[in-house]
Length: 99
Image (cartoon, rainbow, N blue to C red; front, side, top):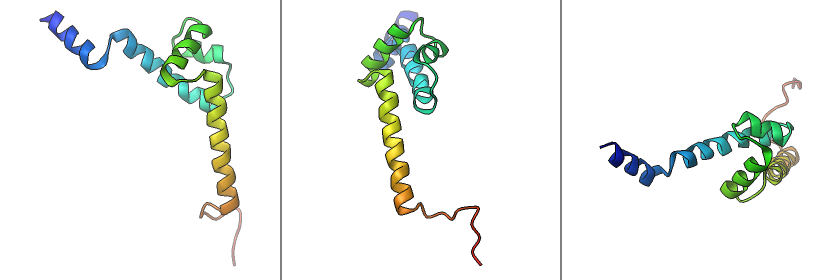
């Protein structure tokens, strides 16, 4: 019975190690996008043994290196903020008072 359950799990979700790897990559995305912490620290905090291994795994999963992911995310975020600043975001500045 256990063999059947293992087979079904592997067939549906992939091997356990692949699943854990996907979780690690997913948890690395947020600090890469929102902080300036070194890639080695991000790798360590997400459970990878070294930065080179995490970079290879990240590239395989996301199609780009962690540093490139960070730059690309920031460029998109900056361009969205610029567009909001140019066109307004429909909100009043909390410091301004209209009388």
